[in-house]
Amino acid sequence: RTPTLTEASSLDDIRHTQETIMQEQDEIIRSLQSGVERQKSLAQNIGDELDIHRTLLDDLELATDETGGSLTQEHRRLHRVLQGAKTSRLYCIAIGLFILLVFIIVH
Picture 1 (tube, one colour):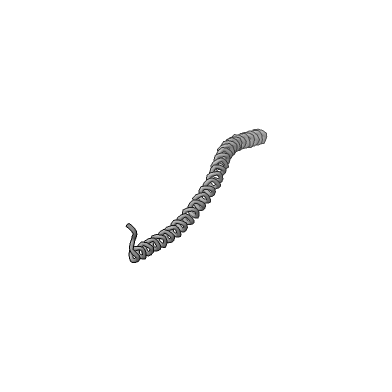
Picture 2 (picture 1 turned 120 degrees about the horizontal axis):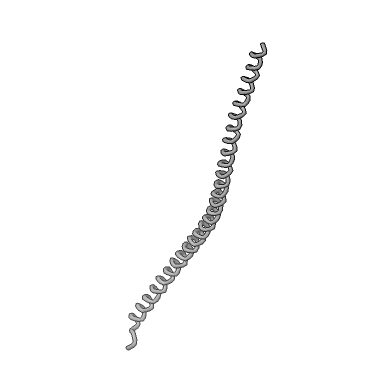
């Protein structure tokens, strides 16, 4: 069956309305696509920043471990020096007492 003039006009209106709606939807989809692309770019930038920070933290951890090892080694060395100083002090006191004893005996 062939549509009448009124029906044809209504069909044209419907078709035009559908095309307008589809164009609006296409515009919305393009806008969403643009937003998704920006989000993707931001996510990639954040990922790159995280990689940089991970590397920096790894370097910091290594430096901290090395410093901790050096501090432990220096603490041991200081302890040995202090023990040596105590021993030297005792020798000085013993020598001083010996000299005092010799002085007392001679006079």
